Amino acid sequence: MAFLNDGWYVAAWAEDLGAEMLPRQLLGRPVVMYRRRDGVAVALEDRCPHRFAPLHMGRLVEDQIECAYHGLRFDCSGTCTLNPHGNGMIPPKALVRSYPLVERYKLLWIWMGDPAKADPAAIPEFNFLSDPAFQNVHGYTLADGHYELMTDNIMDLGHIEFLHPGLLGSDAVRKAQTEIIQKGSTVYSNRVTSDEVLPPVLQTWYEAGDRRVQRWLNVRWDPAATMKLTVGVLPEGEPRESAHESQGCHLMTPATETTTHYFWAQGRNWGTPDPKMDALRLDSLRKAFDTQDKPMIEAVQRNMGTTDLDSLQPVMLSTDGGPVRARRVLKQLIAQEAQASKVG
View (cartoon, rainbow, N blue to C red):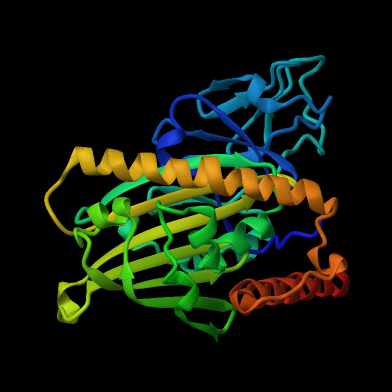
């Protein structure tokens, strides 16, 4: 499985890691996360080096994991600290890998590659998630599809007219102006509609009513699969400062070659706190992602019968610029990483 290892991936929402251990398959590897008594989050390989038992089946003992099978204990660095058998000598190879884990933007970010290269400054910006001015809703789902198919779905929002009719899209989307911009390894896929009447749910979200509006949907992609979506709505004839602009994120982390952890959120920073509005946004997004996007992508994955999209020689449309550019950048980065590994 060819994944980009040297990069930050989302492992969990920070709130989901409490007093209990949290096991998760990430990039095809078993990982267990837990919090030390001081609250700091830790990530270790979820496999005891003795009989390869999952460590999450054991118990936490003073910030260490005790394997449920034979009682070996491992500290936060993955070092074995206790062998309760025989003379108690600890075999030199009694180690499990530890992974850099950073808590930022109310998310837990993990680095699966070379720990020496794990610079927290390289974590993409998602300030809205931790900004108290934003009223955010968020969720998570596990999809049976390759993570690049999940990325394609966000980088090409031309699908929202057809897959989310009456919810997120309208026929103005197909006539939108689009642009693809690349800055370093970051790709932007931007779309602007005009003279659009929003679907009823979005009329309520953005307080636009049935007025005709300009809507921009701007996606920022960073490798391997983290995306920020900025959506702005401006009634025709109104000054730019009267626009309502939401921030969102779509964060894909491969579980295996054909399954993907999907973390998402959407936030607004206008109006007073409104639990009913938040509930509407949450229900609408869950409907879009869990009952429309997810089933479609899973069906595409089954129908493809492979994870190599290029081998099927897909027909390309004008809407494919964003996904194609992101795939190209990611493929190059994975190739460079593989080459550097061979040289090293």
